[in-house]
Length: 109
Image 1: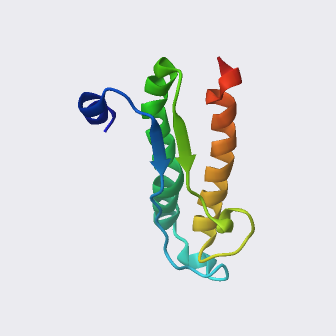
Image 2: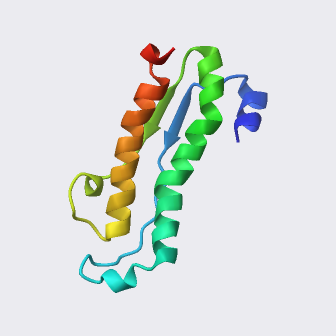
């Protein structure tokens, strides 16, 4: 992804992590939230955005410029929504965004 964009445009100015995955599993149906579903939710909603950031961060740091936008959900702010796994993955994405601001922000250089 990064190599293709760099070849086509010579720079990367913005990354928007907007993909999401969910399975409707009511909170009360904890037995339905299997480890496979849990892992799929975390991979799609938390690990994948992190991997995209890791891929573009060196380019943006070399450029000394760039923006990263992670799209989360209100489900990440309070225990509601369509599944515990989705809510937890979005809460993790919110905190990941804060941590990345510390790691990659202007004062981190």
